[in-house]
Amino acid sequence: MSLASSEQSLIPAEKQATADFEQTFKADHRRRHRNAALWRVALNVLGIVLFVIVWELTPRYSSWINEVLFPPPSQVFRTFIPMFLSGEILENIRVSLVRAASGFAVALVLGIAAGVITARVKALQYLAEPLLHGFRSIPAIALIPLCILWFGIGEVSKIALIAWGAFFPLWITTFIGVRDVNPIYLRSAACLGAGRVTTLFLVVLPAALPFILTGIRQALSISLVVLVAAEMSGASSGIAHMMSEGHQLFRVDIMFIGLVVLGTFGFIVDRLFVAVARRLFPWYQITS
Amino acid sequence: MNTASPLIAASRVSQIYAGRDGSPTWALRDVSLQIGRGEFVCLIGPSGCGKTTLLHLVAGFVTPTSGTVSFAGKPIAGPGPERVVVFQEYALFNWMTARQNVEFGLRTRGLGRKERRELALGALERVNLRHAADRYPHELSGGMRQRVAVARALVVEPEVLLMDEPFAAVDAMTRQALQEDLLRLWQEIGISVIFVTHNVDEAAFLAQRVIVMGAHPGNIRADLAIDAPHPRDRGSAEFAGLYAVVADALATHTRRAS
Ligand SMILES: Nc1ncnc2c1ncn2[C@@H]1O[C@H](COP(=O)(O)OP(=O)(O)OP(=O)(O)O)[C@@H](O)[C@H]1O
Ligand SMILES: [Mg+2]
Image 1 (cartoon, rainbow over the protein chains, first blue to last red):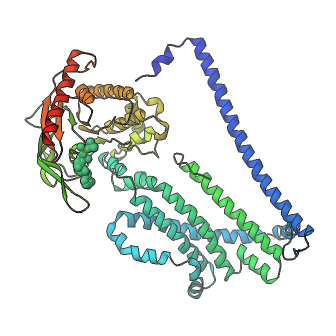
Image 2: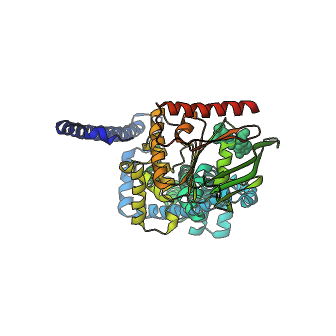
Image 3: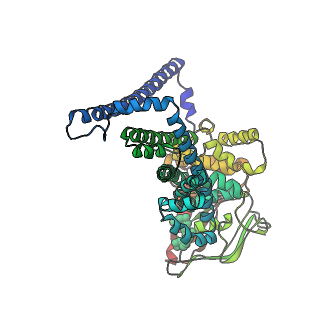
């Protein structure tokens, strides 16, 4: 029952020795962790460097690759610098980022709300089920022409498309997570006197969180896909628009810049997601 | 046993569950039972005899198919903080630390943050877990988790603690420590306890009253009063006697039915 009593019986010298040992153990543990993290980052960087080297050398030393169609990184970089300094790239990134974030934010609120409501109210579930599942199977990209017809090629149509695409994974994962909350949690909450709102925010949503986070992650990557598709089929700014301009000018290097930006973008968003989720929900082990 | 005004009264309660094909299972049939304030009652019986069902009826999670269950003279309409359940499985919210779990039941009481925190730490102190207040459930051992569950239940000051095989999943040594702690708390606070078990030793060690149940249909087969004072010494001849009485009742009453 009380482990404390054994500790008290130790003589001071032994206690000191234990404290020292624990100190070293802790330092060792930290060092091992730091080394493991450094090792990982080093290999990450090495991977990128190797890729760039192969990419640089391939067009130069092979007869079957046309440098115009497959420019090496040095040339892409040379194109990149002036575009970066003029602010053109940053502006395009900003525009794309705002679109993706707005569409995603709308989907986040609506998707989670719809998921919770359909999971908690049976009648609404049955009412909405066929419609939601039907709409869910339409790829957002198929709606682009219609969206342009209705909303034009402005921001609204892009945000709406992204929101549409990101809504469904959020809805379905929230729905499943909330529906499958362990009834023991709900019963515990009920007999401790919790009301509906307390139960929703402190029990149901946290219990459904692993599912919701999966949905958020899917929705983030869908947002990016829809963003690119929407920008390519009618826009006057944005990363994907920059790429389709590169296409028209037959400038593969510009298209490559767009690809690198998109790749980096997606990678950073995913990392950020993992970091934020770890920070906010320390009890939940997210695999990266 | 204050039978004049029982805290909990079940009268002719039946609970029928529909099987997959709609065929009825009598989880409980015509069960009548009265439990007084401050009593420590153990429900014992073979698997499927309706112990959990009876406990859930008192908790208010289910309403009986027929008959009534009342608490302090009023029919039970739903779960409430005067009747808190400690579950067999770990029902701690694993997204909250031990302290936050204990604080949960205090949130609806309009207490300040600081006050809530102090009450929660006090409750953890009572189960000797103040040092683990900031750990998450996955960082606690099975026995520690059940202690937190007990603290979380007691902090809302229930009138009865409903425990469904709360210590079944821990090792024998931890289990004895938990039993001793529970008895201490029960004696300090003076609440009623309904404790489901299918362990004869546990019933003989804890209960003032052992209710023996049988299955098919689930009902009460025997109601034994155990007058021996607490704490009971497991090595003593008296304890061996108690154990024999409970084991005997369980054997005779449940064999006859099947
Ligand atoms: N939700 C349910 N739906 C259908 N049948 C149920 C349900 N809950 C319990 N039963 C049935 O009711 C009977 C009594 O179940 P109960 O869980 O109360 O038994 P128990 O005494 O707690 O058993 P154990 O010792 O195994 O926990 C069993 O036959 C069980 O199959
Ligand atoms: Mg049971």
